[in-house]
Length: 82
Image (tube, rainbow, N blue to C red; front, side):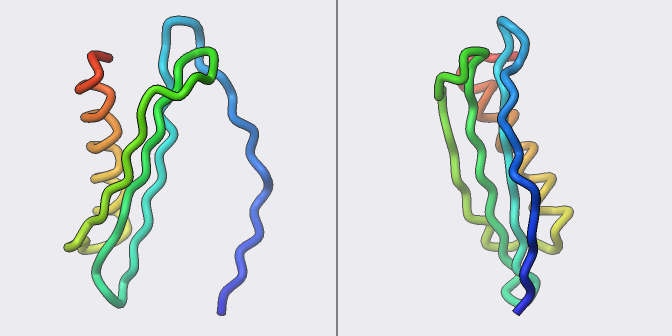
């Protein structure tokens, strides 16, 4: 079992009139699957939307990361953000 220790990150607000997408992706090589998670907040930190998505066929971690970015931008666009 691999244990990973990371530093705690503090959420920083975006500039006024902007939104912030926090995104993450994972890839499970043995199963060839992945997942993405997205949360969108405004400049006050107010929750606007979120999305979690299972990727049934992921070739590698880079694919999961690319799909994460696509899903995040698509979600923001569907809410009317450019």
